[in-house]
Image (cartoon, rainbow, N blue to C red; front, side, top):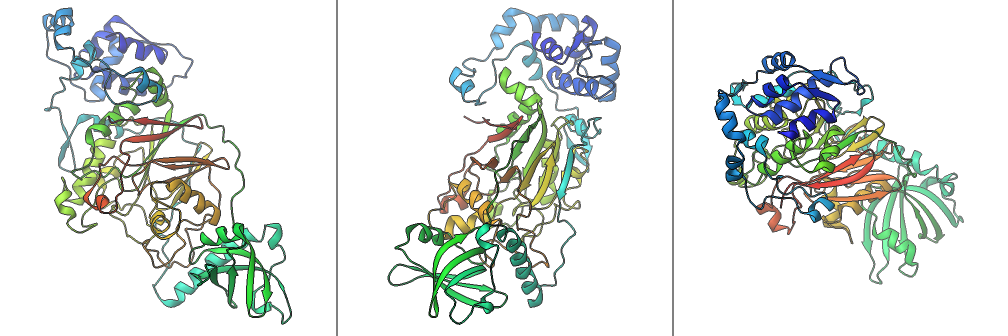
Length: 553
């Protein structure tokens, strides 16, 4: 049981013999210890206080948390502590190798000690009810609001209840005009674009052109050049990008419909020859000097038969500080925020014959199960949840937050914040742009040299064009709002995506590009498109440093 004593000591808490006996008499000493430390540390103690914990205080919190103790007598406890009994039940070959520790891989639990043997004897009878559904008592951990300072947490952008469109043609015109105006303001800051003009202002004999344009169509000529039909709010212009000018030709191959760029060109008669393409781009971002841990997740897909529940439970144990080696537990102890970037559940009727792959066939019950699992995460971690295409939100982007009528049990958890997709949050000075990522599909399938596997390159392109899903009318359903909310107005410190179930990471100009993968194995739908997921690999920014832990063999 030395792990229990050590656990409290690391938090500056000294256990009296009586307090120690009370703790190990509970059905899950390790889990109760986590909850108790949280309670003590969120009261009137500072990090420098040395708390002397007595048995009567432990008794108080046992009653407050509704924890039941074992009905064992002293002889049974002594038998459990017997070395012979311990060795008999000790599992074999259940260790973390040095190589796994080096790679921060959590694939198997540490060898069980006496404390863990007690943990394995959790009773299934001690249940509470949420929405008339019985769930484990650990759910209570998040029903009590923690006394933790979140003054440096801020929702910078949440588009829920901000849909202003009737779906008429005039709305679509307003939508594209708004996109053009927003991106023009960014592009005109570039030196080459300080003196730009409209298409209608091009003079009869003018040869040098500086324009800010929207791509209308891209095609390849019979000689292999790229001919692009551009437009602005005054007219249209064709610009040829010659394959003999290799650098600008490569730039033109990345152009997609409806994006906005700056163009310098030579006008020759009715045709313009492109010399350069100026993308909106992003500046280099400074380090945030963050002093907390942020965990990034998405695409958990609770309710699917391919949901990796064992790995997710292992992840929850880790984030609570109850699992992993010493280094991994130290990372967990520093975590203050967790993001869920869409598809927390598998949903209903998302694709043909989905019901065959569902373990839970009711959307509300899927969210209830999500609440049961997330409710076991310690309550001093703020969890930010955005919707994805599998969630109970409208499909067209921007998506409002998951509505309470489907996820009442999740809304009961005090440490959860719901936001839209996309959504923008400030986590103690680290500004995170959360976007589920359907726009990735348009580039991976339709643009040369891009793929789902290298979605980090697509995220880099999102930043270069300052838009999350520019192509209207393709795979990503876009709502023709009066304002284009998928323009990246403010440059984030982190761009977090999901959707494609493949982990990637790249640091681009000081911006962390993170795709958080999935907690689901390969589906039949993914097999059709040869998408191979990287499940149960969780990215973390630990004091601003990128790390990744694995929770599966």
